Image (cartoon, rainbow, N blue to C red; front, side, top):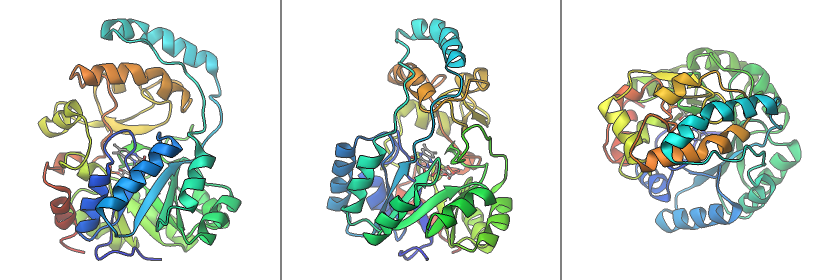
Length: 334
Ligand SMILES: Cc1cc2nc3c(=O)[nH]c(=O)nc-3n(C[C@H](O)[C@H](O)[C@H](O)COP(=O)(O)O)c2cc1C
């Protein structure tokens, strides 16, 4: 399996705002592989996003989904976290959300993918059941599973996946670890090195924002690189204004891996919320729903101190160029 594009570059699916049909189409137009981010969307909205993407490009595209996990192990800890957040909610004039579990409409979205004529389905947060992978493959869809270590890669290979997105600890956004309690600290190069033994094609992701980063990942055995943070400030991404500004103005000095926002480990800019609550309890999507109104209220007020500002370790190299220029710059040595 190689990518069906001129350049071995894949646009990371970025749920929660940044991914747009315009971004997928611009990336595809520059010779890379575009993705629709299906996480958080209802099945109907996912269908609309696919239609809108199809109206902008006839190139092969992928769709990414979140694999549902189990309920939060310690609801009382989430209650205590809610109590801790109450003063901030009052300050922001927002109500805390209900910390509810749901499966992100997973089965209905699989039905959408089976009939959508897409090239690839990618998954994060776990591995779909072998029956689901077989159903997608029978419909002509390649299946790629995000993995962070050899154990996860062996499970995905055994379930019938065509390949992996190998995610290093440098990555912006959520870690794709199958066990949400496990915090991934393995750098991309080491992950590629060990997962190569499983023998399926690897798409490398995490911290890739320059041509040199991309070249190194291909030299380490990857068939392609998947870039997320590098595209966040492009005009085609729907990244909020305070998020963009924090990235480009370097409002915060570093990135941090935190559970503060969603109850799942994720890397983002080290703003006060990420740092002060990095010991937040596990529990995705319960904690995501709990904090969401606070993050939305702060974003609406132009305040970058509270929202999740996902970013990988390569964030200081990013620019506000059009997506096609970013793709060409990162692909210059490939
Ligand atoms: C804002 C943002 C949203 C993301 N959303 C998703 C997603 O919906 N699904 C997914 O599989 N990965 C998601 N990721 C992770 C990317 O697939 C990828 O692992 C990561 O962007 C790679 O690191 P980089 O950001 O340093 O390029 C997201 C990353 C970011 C930065």
